[in-house]
Image 1 (spheres, helix red, strand yellow):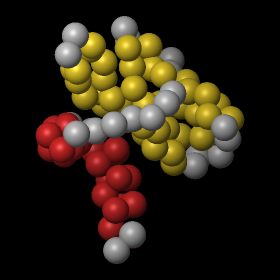
Image 2 (cartoon, one colour):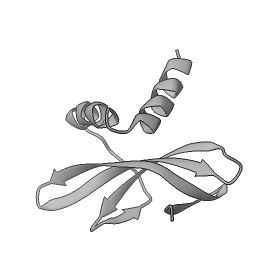
Image 3 (cartoon, helix red, strand yellow):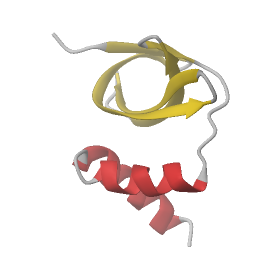
Image 4 (spheres, helix red, strand yellow):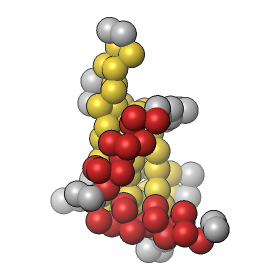
Length: 92
């Protein structure tokens, strides 16, 4: 059974997910990027963070070196990579 995610547009299915582990002093957490599919088939991207394995909403901050790691991690998540790159390409 696939994992579900609640969104303002209704329930969605988590298609792909990647997590970038981070640390600030003694605090450990992860930035989570999810490729979601809504009930109507709409594609959604969610940026969140997690603490203790629980995904939480709120602001997500990526440092420059985290963005480098995100680029590498996207190589292992083709659906997320395609969707994010398509968004970036269309904004030019």
